[in-house]
Length: 399
Image (cartoon, rainbow, N blue to C red; front, side):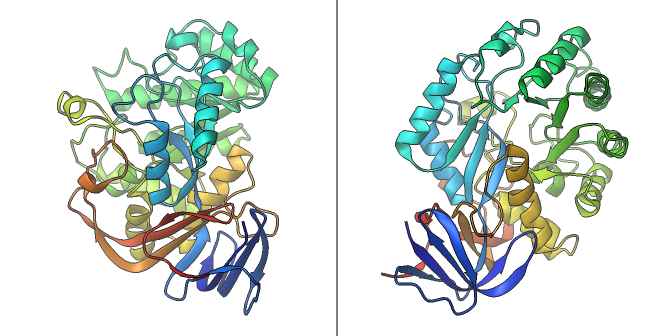
């Protein structure tokens, strides 16, 4: 698809200018000012044009829990939020512990042709905390393994997992939680497991990505490890940045103000690699019964732009690096930057538009959000993938 986005405020993690972006054959072909190509045009005169967002942490609940979400509704939700790539966790039913389920997810996603998908496979088979033999059957389409939703408690099993992952070129995404400690002190649970996993990554030479970091102590250990050259990266969520002293049920829990402040400092100084939504949709009944998680895709940019950029903590270009370029780099994909040869994936946002979050209007099946009724700046008006408009929330188009 060929399309020319005209007269926008173009921002990515490396540059900013007022001008145009031309996409040809699904790839960025040209960018600059006063471009003129004979193709469909989007007038972005009042909008900011950014690389679409890349999410390293999502739950689309398919197969097995499609009453909460499925690949179609999750993909529509992602596009409404400005995302064109999602990294799906394996805590489905059955657990994603083999290539048959990977094939199911990838084929279903390809049929819908909405967003690009990577399917994570479990570290231990069926999350049993012990069995690793299934990792030998994985092919190159799998880049990450994770038992997200629970930690791998046994030290010896996690060490063997790091060795196997290193052998196969896989990255371990750690849900840093010791379930034996969680009932006593969930903060200690995250902190000790973070230290354990960093130590095993260092000892094994494997690569570790720490999901949804939420405590100041865990972040301190990660930054220390990075300075020592350990192969560790990390992500934080919008809700752990924007909220504190809040009992909305997520895992890990929303922490204290000092933790949120330290996470924001980590974004400013480069200690944190990416912002990921941990999109975790639930039915109303499951949420009432205590299920942890939020539907995060459709509110992520608005929350992050308001909390981080409008309040002066980071620049918009830094936010683009955190939501687009760096996660794309970690995923090994050509997304997240406005550069010739990169995928023609863009998000057009109205930075001046104030929106009131209304979970009941989410395109996701999951309406669960702690931000319901809150107001934030920055609304996604359009999402373009490979030069094709996949979400149109009021674009001005010249055919």
